[in-house]
Length: 255
Image (cartoon, rainbow, N blue to C red):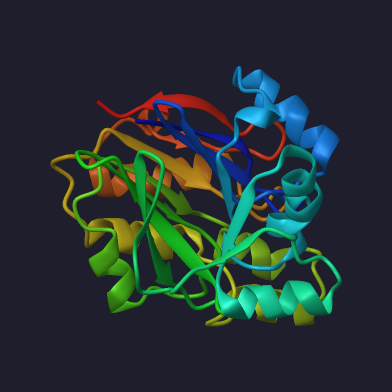
């Protein structure tokens, strides 16, 4: 099993996980043409995508899903709440599959286990993906850490964790007060320290890859995010990957 990121941040998000001929997009936050360009960097044709999973309806995660799915004839998996929200925006994909936020399901050679997260969206989820032997956990867009999130992310072989902002940078930055309050709130985004505290509660023995994700371009830096996570792991900061907005991160194989 391997995973990659097409881009991560407030302007668009998409992750790709692959086992054999099964290729699943987690979120589709770019337009169809941009998605094709970013997939090409990973050596993947858009028509090779098996399915799309949408974590929540915010445009940086879902804006391209309906058009991409229609053009390349793939199903879109999402929670009922997310479906209602996208339908209200006139952007509900035609081929949808309902996701129970507490029930796993199989797509091809992969098992997808959703779990709910606290975010200001309609029924948002994140995922742990398994091929039966290895586990990759994706966690972004969560305002605070819950006990259920900690339980779901146990024993992962690879993790992508939200490190959205440095609290001091955000508070001193140029964002309006209302936006700062939203980001800092219990349904906003995890900061570097919160991500590190979550990581400290997880077993480290199996961890092969750790990627910092959804970094704010104004209120964070790769150096700050890496330092926070490396302090928990006791590793060199450079060992930790950073999925950025323009390039994402290339293929990482979980052995």
